[in-house]
Length: 212
Image 1 (cartoon, rainbow, N blue to C red):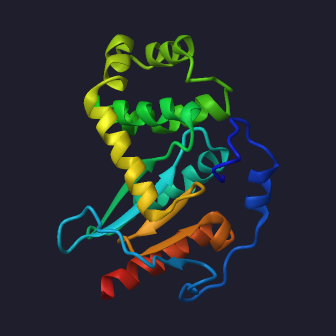
Image 2 (image 1 turned 135 degrees about the vertical axis):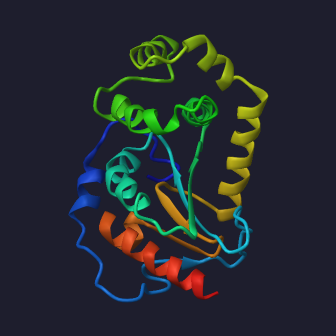
């Protein structure tokens, strides 16, 4: 979903993405299936590790549609690959979802709640930028709502949101979901042609990064 396409509903764009043909097998094609960054971004991983990043938004229907395939892929990554998600906010209405991600992470609830947040927004049509709706979701999942709200408003979460913004700017992210490897390569579902294609391209880019 591009920066100007903010919407909470799952529209025809998701169906069109899902309908795209899978990419051909083989090494990913530069300029077609992935993009090489002209100005590489320093990865946030220790030496010997390869960084894989997803830029996403809870508000994005394409990210919701991609999540099951991405999650299954992440669970099978080799030990030398470090995966992280970076929530993106292109405008003020999207910022609460960015804060929610980092607050859940700080409270140790991210793994349990990540898919539930997506489903609440895109399946149950819950507006989690509203306090009453967020409170209901927190209560239904045993999360202390006042603590969650305090964490969302905390300095540490604000710092992480600023860092996420800086990273998205460094990568020149203008739509989500976007995937990146080792600060050098980027791809997306749209560019690769399908969910499976994007993950196949990621496997190829990880191999490329591994070879240096």
